Length: 336
Image 1: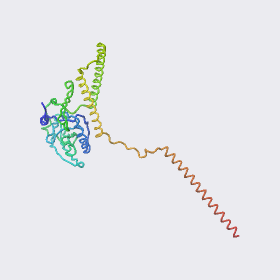
Image 2: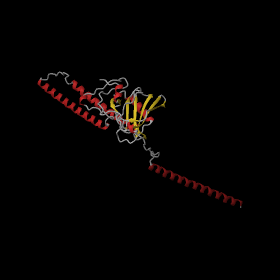
Image 3: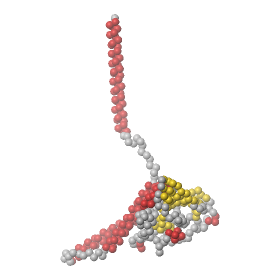
Image 4: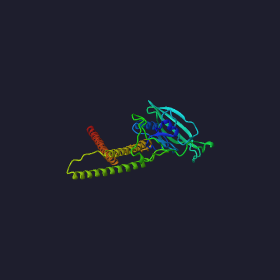
């Protein structure tokens, strides 16, 4: 049975971008705008996955498909203050909406005060208004209302998400993606966010290697069988009945899907590094383009030229002085 967005909101499901966006202590307006603009392009080719947000960690990031007319899903946090919303023009043709929830805590946890803060960023103009970047961080702590301290906000355990991933925007919007060999694949996590990307890449690489080995073994068996048939039939040509086409297509689709997921994991790491990586790169020294030995050699040559010119100048001055003395003595002799 298909799950509508309204039903999903009632149960706490939401459509998530499938890659792990990692954690960040702070998200600037510029960073949020850049991530939402990249997400507008990426979401057209990447299916979103039904997931919960449940008791997220400080610094956790998530990208959701959440139309403006729907409320934010239950995230396992009790919020003591109502959300506040503000809009700002961040660039020509770009308007950003920021919605903030303060004084949050997890009931029955070790939270001693309501310090959790949730910000939601949405591009009203200049992007896709249904894509929302969510960031959980630390805000100004507030006392917890005693009556709410142990009052849960949702029922546990959380049930498994029943729906496959789907495209949310673009030409393929609404198209569901049923992975091959679904019965043998692990179910996605029902709580929190996606699993660790490094482990996912290792699992995908291992699966791809197994598929390639199996494919090579299958081809070797087919070649051996073809040689045997050729020898037993006296060189008569074999007729391909196409019985292995279905197996080939399944293996090819599985391999393509594994590579597709791995590439998106790698690109997610690239985007995360670009957004939150270490930007405090030490600039190069302005003198790094010069070679010290070359400069010292040029300085020595110039100094030698200066000294030579100074000696020539002194010699010319001495010569002029000598000529002046000779002229004076000759005039004195003539007058005498």
